[in-house]
Length: 144
Length: 144
DNA sequence: GCTTGACCTTCCTATCATGGGAAGGTCCAT
DNA sequence: ATGGACCTTCCCATGATAGGAAGGTCAAGC
Image 1: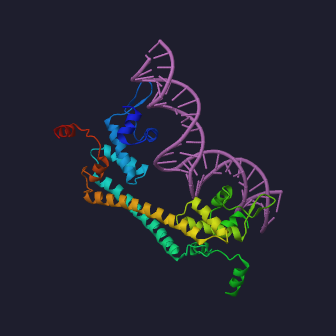
Image 2: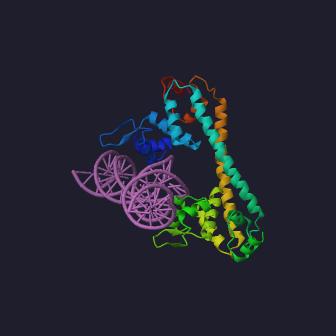
């Protein structure tokens, strides 16, 4: 099976299949006389494995570890679980961070009239902490 | 104020300040005779603005738009709000995606014994859709 | 057997925001 | 005038992915 067929069978682009070969993650079973990569069922399964793992947000580094556990029939499931749990914690942290951003912005947007006038609490927030620059603001600042 | 002082005053690294100059986002007010960048209060405020916007997850592209609205005293707040709302929708979509990943993995991890044995529902899921490769599995597959 | 088009190969480039580092110039205090 | 802390530009790297160029290979139809 050449790279194009492997791509169709696995759903991974030929570009990425070559990349996985290059970084040593999934090497072709062999090469033809004319240097074409040849893949068999084993590699196809590994490519599918990678695709599914990517869709669950694992990094290539984590996938390298998962794939090596997958290849090892004697692996302790503990190790797989540890990687998954670490990844879940990572996802949760990033979700919380983005949630905080979204909540802040939702609040600011809610307070913004969103009309023709220039007054805008969103820009005001982004300006927070900045020194006053307009003459009027300098007057106000001195008055404080 | 030279770049090091601007960095301290804004909390943006000198590397990034040079980068913002390079892409034309925030140009120094002037250059000294010896080609040192010089910043004044206006640029410092813009750097702070960018820093805050980045912390809310805006892309540099969105920040370019926000900064140009910020500089425009006549801007309609509608435009600012539109950018913010689009970004919130974007964040929400990404959060939902990651939430789905985390939920799936939490479930799989929950079903995984996490002990010395090799059986692992997490790896099984990643293998889903793959063709059977072991002799026993081939026998089972033929039987279906 | 030859042409054609679809495929394959390697190599280079870019993304986006950020940081690391080298080589060389500048500024200021001692 | 020397040293150290700063500045400058230029190049490279990240992670996962895609685009494209230049050239070789294969199979089908004539």
